[in-house]
Length: 294
Image 1: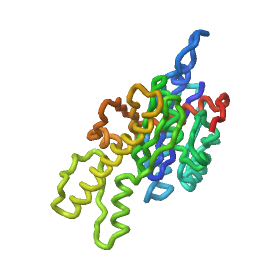
Image 2: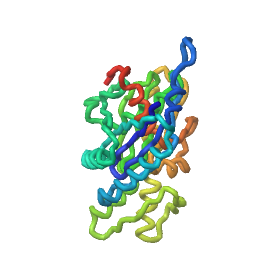
Image 3: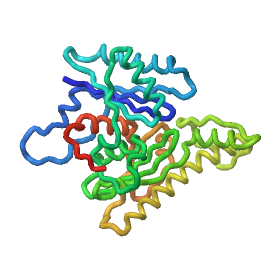
């Protein structure tokens, strides 16, 4: 049996998800009859390790601890395979070297050529692999002839569109909340950087101090931007034979914050915290048989 460790190397964190061998078995049809696409697998165990502003030794120790844990818990005779997607080349290099020294590897590094995804975009090889994997996973969640909008709220926020045929049509990128706070501090002489906590209570719209005003602007401005982008992407479907509003899928560290306040009229809203990790599982477990559609 084969367990899969999916690793998502982002701009601030390394996210890890363990998919036990049983999850792969569930993906196989039990009869010869035609079936619908299998459901999206979700990891049995997850970990999120911050690498930004930390030493390699420090964050790598946390990664190794998680890997050691899942290996100790694995069923006898099970092999651990590793697939990774990265938007941070230097962290990926440190990760590969660190895991190799621990006897883990080689890592399968996914690229856009690993994916079965039709895309109506320019230069697909320059699109972040995390965006592509998120929409690959989203294709498992939407119903036939239903469009989907994927909102990934991390260091950067992406809002991407899958049309009714499952074709990736592109989308929008904007700064995440913490990045917006950093930009205000770095680009001005007097404004302070404030901490953004996705679990915090919503700030008052009217800030009585500079810090409160920044918090209000970033918090409510981000929610407003995502809402408007979602509306704009939905309007692009008006000319198509779209009969139902698109499914909106939220993922990323700040997704819970958005879900609290993102009113999306007549649209289904779904939270999938491990969407990119599930996309890695989808791409890795089917890599040998996937058509290279990009």
